[in-house]
Length: 202
Image (cartoon, rainbow, N blue to C red; front, side, top):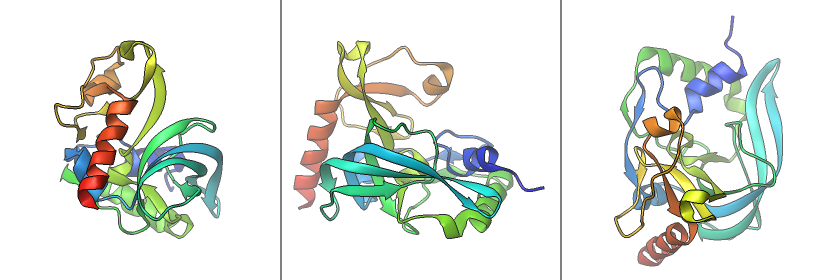
């Protein structure tokens, strides 16, 4: 019997390491380089997608608030990983379909087989934009007490890191987040760093 939506997506496109699949650590400049779109977006709608009786994730439509890379656009669609909130803002690193590179330190036959099964079932439903670095490249913009009630991003620094000039701040995270070395970063610091990367690449 085929594995259903949550099990398939959790294995195929989850941001956290499971089944001994471990992701490489990239700098913010590297994930920027490997993305086709980088921007701050606000999700307007989300709807599930299917292939026959199989659920294949979610397509989100988002308004572009600020953009750092890619052809200028007012809105964008991306998916298929579920779990993002309508009305919330995210910093998104997106790639076009078929261009996402999987930066892995290790994998195994279980995770590879389940990912292949997901692609076989749901591949035809996938859309133009997907979250870069195996769905790690998207972070909610939110208030945090650790940031003196200012806006920031919680970033899994085991997989994405910033230079020392962008201050990383410890937080009261749960075990899953501690396992990926989650840290808070002030939104102004992150966005200014992306502007510098964009200027250096222009």
